[in-house]
Length: 196
Image (cartoon, rainbow, N blue to C red; front, side, top):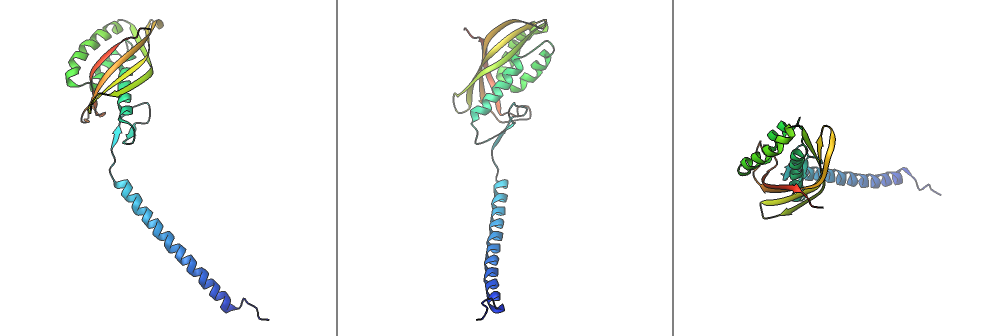
């Protein structure tokens, strides 16, 4: 009986397997090239992003995130800046808060800030700890953010008073600039102790 694995039979089998491997290689190469084009196109397509430097969460917000998240974070950053202040940081608060404000609100806020910072320069400090943040859309360009929490009055390193406190911030969308990289400016603010 003749052996089935003659050189000609083996050659035919290897030729068939070689053809299968060649087809698999060509399909794999085609898939890799196609994926490369798709990746290149995806990486070069511009996508809208909100960049909020120095925020507590990572600083880049993609278009898939809610605008309310960005607005809330900008409002919270402003509230923490003006709500937690000591005699050592009063001048810094005065300078840094201006970048958040609309030109119309800036003069009114500077008078309010002066009233707020005068006792602080006299040795009193405040520490605000937010516990709740709510953002609602007023119209196409305007948002309202309410940030509630606890405010402690500190004097001589001792907590003299603790109260529930709330800030209501009105923000308006604007074109981002070097001074206002957030693209939102504060147009109004109300603050005060919350009746328990």
